[in-house]
Length: 79
Image (cartoon, rainbow, N blue to C red):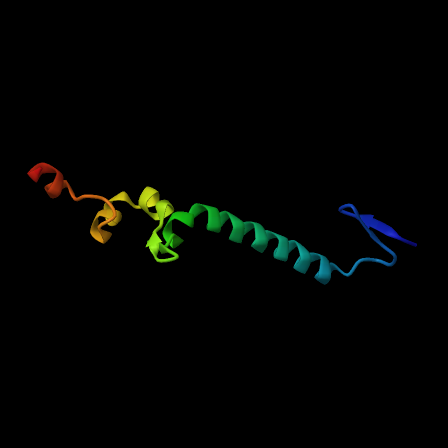
């Protein structure tokens, strides 16, 4: 006799170990995607193909000044 469990058809009684592993894998996938979105700013690199990366400048304006992408405040005051 077949079973439908959580929308999945099983010909025989489902193996609960496999079901738990499947749920844990799905949870880990969602957790990794959430972390990637939450920390995306931290993995942006300052250069892209040898040119300043606009995403880096937008995400890290203070650090962009250290790389020379934006003028430092002292330079703006001198002018």
